[in-house]
Amino acid sequence: MRKPSQLPTRAPRKQAMTAREVNAFDQMFDMIFDAVSNTKKDSKRSAPESIGIGRARSQEMGDLFGRLRRQSKHQRWTSESDEELDRKREAMELCDTDQQLLEWAMRQVFDESKLCEENARKAEASPSASKTSVQLQPPWYPHMISLLMRTFREKYGDPHLALSIFDHARHLSVPSFVFGCTTPAYNELIETRWRFFRDLRGACDALEEMRVNGVEMDNRTRSLAEMIRREVGERNMWQEESMIGTGEVWDLVSRIEQLVAQRASPRKVEKQRKSRHWSPTNANRWASANEVWKGAALTEDESSDGWKFNQWEHPLTTGL
Image 1 (cartoon, rainbow, N blue to C red):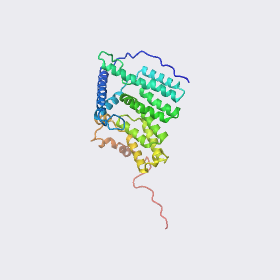
Image 2: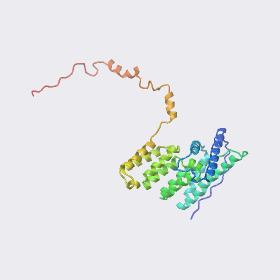
Image 3: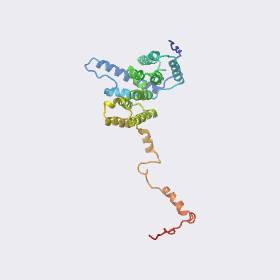
Image 4: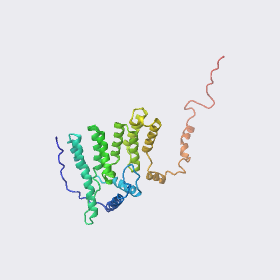
């Protein structure tokens, strides 16, 4: 059995963070530490309100997820990150079996995710530590999650392992869930649940999670939703057909269409509202330019088309 080649080590990045980024990371770490300490205190009580997918989140955890999600969208992608991602992909290709790939993923993806978070915590706890390369998660982490899911599903024909990868990243830690379970990973989740299990409710739940957790939907998300709607319309058999009625099926399809419907961003609406060429009062106001087309007809030569007013052929009369 061939083992994947060892990845070469590289010196850490020397690019310094801006003051705004340092302040943002300080605030994120404070929120994470407060959430962890509060969770440990509440764990001693009976029936604790733990944090997890499918449970109602507290206001503090809602703010934490929102802050981390916004920061994850602004992670820097450097040439070093691109090279590291290429090396990860090459190492994946060296795995001969799904078992080898799973063992490699646990070491080279998820263990590095935990190590990156631990280093970030230590750097934040030490006032004298340098913050030149503080990162909650590696930049390549979300790309590897979606790539692992697709590889297990397509190359090895194991959709259960694909779902397990997403579930493991989701429950590994809060930063792992926020930074790792992004739009591409959710797309793989939706496609796996529908194509291999015909799980209509599961696909709808995944879209609900995206909307609730602030994960943006892209064209592929909408394409998957359209595929689901079309195949349901063709009356293909799916997992829940014997458990839910036709009316509930179409309720789920309607909910999916509502979730993927594009919404105009508040910034775009405000920009359009402030435009000097548009206002809600004069958007449909008449202007003389709207009547220009009539002037061309009035100035044309009357004999140019061979027609004159009140001069046309009368219909032939018959002797009936």
